[in-house]
Image (cartoon, rainbow, N blue to C red; front, side, top):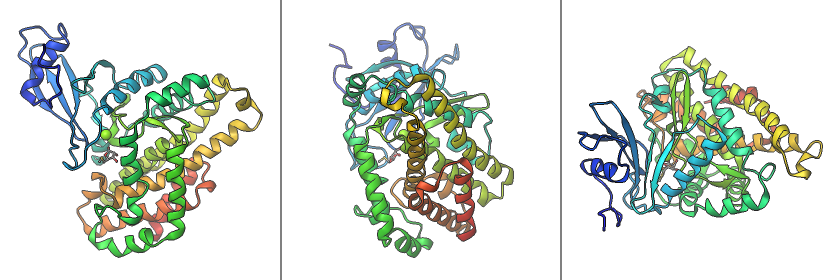
Length: 403
Ligand code: SR1
Ligand code: MG
């Protein structure tokens, strides 16, 4: 019998014994390990364990039964298994772009992984208006390699269906279905966080726009039914670590087989939140970098996608001339649509982003939020007209002029 035969949520002072028991030899047996809970997300607990004598460290991420963002919300701790398994898979398709997983414990719902404390959490680094020259290249590579390689274009169809089954993630998907693809448009569960100065604007532009709601309803059904590729599922700047010469994507607990545009759209929307913050602070060079990066992410994604398609497509019907271009255009259209829903939900929904909520001047914050709402509507309502990186940048600047 071990004390880890039954699940319990660990406290900081219980983690050293856990690591020494489960990963003997990683640290010297007599190491005086120091632990700090550094989790910043809405769901889990993240413990950084350090041996001060050697500087060696490790991360233990444990799923709690209740979510950190709300004690009333409970989701299966199986999300931790999904996260470990997908990180191992993503490391195969996009080596060097995710943290290394050392082990996963199904009873304690804890995975142990490489410590990336020499990197910064991208959202906070962007809020300090730091820029990252490798980001567009790395994230485009990550998305093309993890997404296109897990579609029916490349993957053997029975192997893909087996993966669809193992990555079925109903409870985490339900969070997205509610928080992203419904509540920003009707506040059905009365938990939206609307910035009071723009409450009337939100009512008119989101809650009372039936044409918009129809498009979002279609997107919700696409999200639920289009098992196109194995998504990260929550690819925002709080799920990415960066430093000047490295990018690492983590936290894929929302992973499931869904529409590729959900991941790509999330990345673009979160770069727009960074731009919002820079715009409010008058950080012009930073804003230029954000727009340049939006442009590059889309354009590099297009180029890398076609290259990867050409090299790896195995499905005979996908090789029919014209299919690759049609498929990519449909993904860029979805990118625009889900960029729009992410802009909306982070502005008025339950889970907001600090890039925007920390804008201290109420007028500047209201302006940023209106830009998100107006551009989000443009992305959703005119999704099929978005093709190039420049199209995405132009929508942000158009909204900035109208807000
Ligand atoms: C209830 S969880 C709220 C949000 O946090 C996660 O990171 C996802 O983005 C989710 O929608
Ligand atoms: Mg997360």
